[in-house]
Amino acid sequence: MHPRNGLSTSAVVGGKLARSQSTTQFTPLNDDKVVEYLFASDASAIIEHTNRVIYLEDDDVASVEEGLLTIHRLKRTLDDSSLHREIITLKLEIQQIMKGNFNSFMQKEIFEQPESVINTMRGRVNFENEAIILGGIKDYIPEIKRCRRLLLIGCGTSYHSVIATRQILEELTELPVMIELASDFLDRNTPIFRDDVCFFISQSGETADTLMALRYCKQRGALIVGITNTVGSSICRESHCGVHINAGPEIGVASTKAYTSQFISLVMFALVMSEDRISQQPRRSEIIQ
Image (spheres, rainbow, N blue to C red):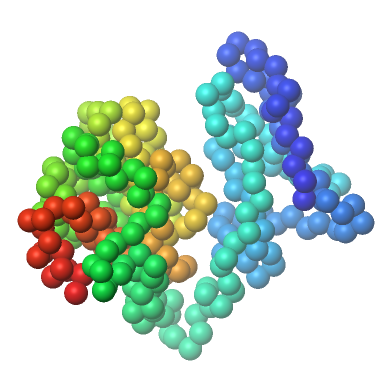
């Protein structure tokens, strides 16, 4: 498919792009092939049919007519960076969302935890050298070390993973660590400063309260770090940097393997923050080994 973006020649009217120009169109590269479009709220619902997806943003309206997909922007401002809609190829496989021989998805995901823990640490933990590499945030580590405080924000199980790791984060980072329930955080109009670092933890990356809290902090100039299990999710796209927990799809409502992977991801972050502190080396070795 080939995108034709009408935004490049948009006229500005009253500080906003003219509505007639705020459209993006996608047409097949090979006109002799029929293209089928599927609409779903989650990629796992259509993975058995296709692994190529386009994610819509807030205020997008998509329509299909005579094989042509049109995405229309209801609202746009000059500082809006959502100019393009890319076609993304998913790595998700149909076997990952099948229940198999288990009685329930929750039971299946409980037994998948040894594998998901390994996947979370794969390529990131060097046990011989006691080194931790988090590629998604390594360029931001110097800025994080200079911050005023760490704020960790989530809902439900993600919030509990934050509670479980708060002590080790404070111990290894030697920074004040504030934990917040996303819904309560917004109700209080919490003061946020430009030298704050805000972590947003969500399995799906689409949790509404967590996403609203992210935008609240981002508007106030804080550094945004996303920790999610879903590549291409809203929290992934709107964060400055982040960590993908690599737990695999989680279908069960009660979180299991995503919780353990979130816990390990936060511990790995604490280990990265303390790698140049001599006083913390015995504790780091104890945790890694």
